Length: 228
Image (cartoon, rainbow, N blue to C red; front, side, top):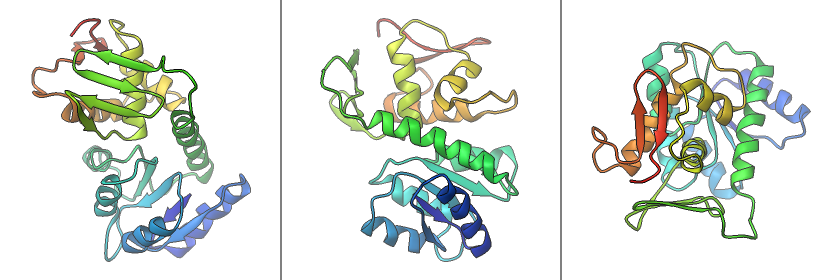
């Protein structure tokens, strides 16, 4: 995995905790250096600081998402909800505010990696292809198509879509989606699920104001209809 932060002490601290868990850790001091590391190495997860010189974490995330889909955990000294929403909307899968507990970061890394590696495992059967109207989801190849058009989803976005698609007609609350996808307790004030639902809709819906696929059940949660 790759740790990107312009603060050398933070880079080294995160690397020590991750290496203690047996992970191979690469390091970069800014977004430009991170892009170069990614060209030369296979990376399964990024820990990416936002405020950095040359190329900041937001711009780096946008460039990385043009070609790669590994989980990205953003770090920021900014704790406002809008900062978090902006970070997640660029393609990040999780967001932590500095100062943070390194053990919590390790736990989140493990959670993201479990989901990412599970989604990338090969399947011997073709039973994992889900079709809902013009939407096709292949969980073996992690391919999503709408009207034959390829749709690029982050690992977290894919996990949410797969959960709803496999359980068509079932309404999942925000808390249920979070705990099923993130595998950790839900925080009542956390709007992470809402942000990811919005991003999925932007990618698969023709009109996000009148979604065909992911429906909002006001006061309850979200579902994908049995028939679209």
